[in-house]
Image (cartoon, rainbow, N blue to C red; front, side, top):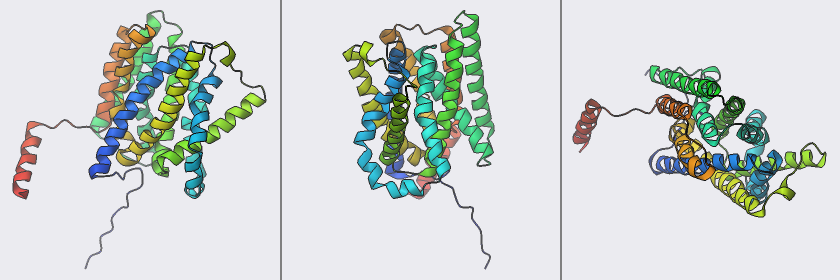
Length: 325
C-alpha cells in the first residue's frame, strides 16, 4: 500500500461551505454597505470641529463596553492567540488605522477614501500571501493587481494635474491605511477568533490607548465645539454600525469566505461612496475618480479570483448535473 501525503490547509486557505458560506457572502455584502456609510461619515467628521481623537473614541468606546462580556467569555482563546497576530489586529484596525483614515479624510474626498482603502487592500493582501504564505499568483490575479495599480496611479496623477494639490496627501495616507487593513484582515483570518470577541478586544485595547493619550494631554477633543446632532449621528455610525455590526459581520465573512472574496464584494464600496457623496456631501464625481473607480473595481474583481462562467463551462456544468441525476 502506498501512503499519500496531503498538504494540510492553513487557516488562510480553509473556507466554509453550504449555508455557512452563503451567510458569509451576505455578511460581506452587509459590511460593504456599512463601510460606504463609514467613509462618508468620516469625511463629514474630519471637516467638522471633531478631532481624530473624538472620532476614534466614538468608534471604540461604546463597543468596548457592550462587547466586554464576549471578551471575558473567549479570553482563553484570545490569550492563546500568537501575540504577533493580536498586534496585527490592533495596529491594522485599531487606533493607528483609524487615525490614518481621519487624517486622510481631512485632505481628500470620501470617494477617494472608499476607492483607495477598499480597492488597494487586496494588492497588499496579495503581497502578504506571496511573501509570507509563498502563494503563487495566477495570470488573472496579476492582471487584476496591475489594473488596481493603474487605477490608483490615474487617480493620483489626474488629481494632481487638475490642481487638487491637497488630494494627493490624503490619497497617500489612504494607501498606508489600506496596507494596515490588509495586515488586519490576514491576521484576523489566521487567528480565527470569534468575531464579537475579536471586535470587543480590539475596541477595549483601543479605548485604553485613547484614554491614556488624552490623560497625558497628547490629544485634544473638539466635543464642546460640535453640535449635539453631529455627535449623535457619528456615535450611531462609528460605534453602532462600524464598531458593533461591521465588527461582527466583517470578522464572520473573513472566517467563512476569506479575505479575497470579501475584497471582491467590497469593490462595490467605492461605487456606493462615489454616488452617495454627491447628494450628501456635495462632492463632485470627477473624471479622475471615475477612471480610477473603473480600473480599481475591475482589478479587485479579477484579483479576487472571480471567474465569469463561459458558455462552455455552463454546458459542462449542465452535463455533469445530468449525469448525477
